[in-house]
Length: 138
Image (cartoon, rainbow, N blue to C red):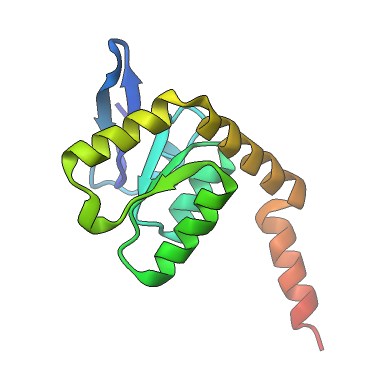
């Protein structure tokens, strides 16, 4: 099993009510958890991890601990690829229901794939860097 600092859930062979959890302390979250084979990314809405998940078409469960991350998670929710949950609501039963919803409702995966395609068409990080350089020039 690959390991990373993050956790990812995937539906086990017995169905969506049982989940495998992948986690560890080793770095490399974006390579192992945020890949096309990942079924769901659960995050505190760190920009890098959430964008990596979305760029691979992976649905997101966002649990933002601060106001600015709440807003970022709201933008993601408005685009359709995931759900947002307040930290104070993140009890095991609530988390399990949200994870179950994200794993069983195909609209979240479809929206995540749409976001990934849009990011790809926009040119990704390379294009963003080009635009920043263009704007920064006198």
